Image 1 (spheres, rainbow, N blue to C red):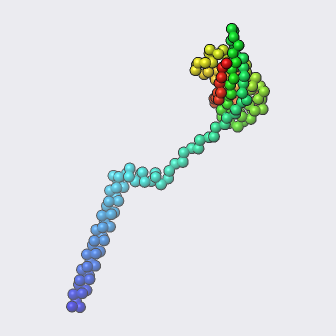
Image 2 (spheres, rainbow, N blue to C red; image 1 turned 180 degrees about the vertical axis):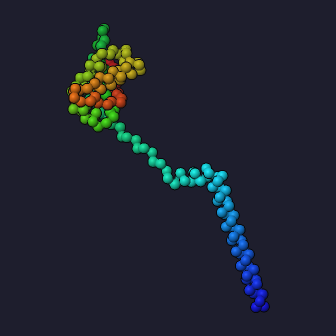
Image 3 (tube, helix red, strand yellow; image 1 turned 135 degrees about the vertical axis):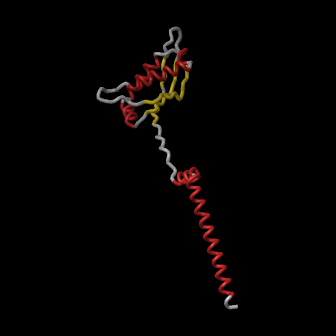
Length: 162
C-alpha cells in the first residue's frame, strides 16, 4: 500500500499541473488574439482610463447700462422709446474702458436711438439694424491712445415704444 499512495499522489499532481498549464496557455492565447483582433475593445478601455477634460467655458462679462428714454424720430407724432440695454464684452479691459467713458457711451447710445422711428424699431430687421449700429458706435475708440473695446453683443432687457 505504501507504493500505491505515492503513485496516486504523483499521478494526481501531474494531472493538476497539466490542467494549470492548459488553462494558462488558454488564457495567454485568448489575450494574444484579443490584442491582435480585438483592438477596439482594448482601445476603449485605455481611453476610458484617461478621460480628456473639456476646455472650461469662459464666464461671460455683461455691462448693464442705466435705462434710456428717447424721443423717436417721428415726423407727424411724438413717440417715446424706453429701453434697458446690457452690453456683452469679451474681456475685463473692455468693461473697464466702457465704465470709465460711461457719459460718452450713453451719449453715443442716445444718438443712435434717436435716429430710428417707431415703425422701423417694431420689426425684427429694424432691431437687428439698431443692434449693429450700437455695436459699431460703441466700438469706436474713446481716445486715440486706446484700443477699441471688444463688444460681442448688445442685449435689450426692456423695450417699450409709446
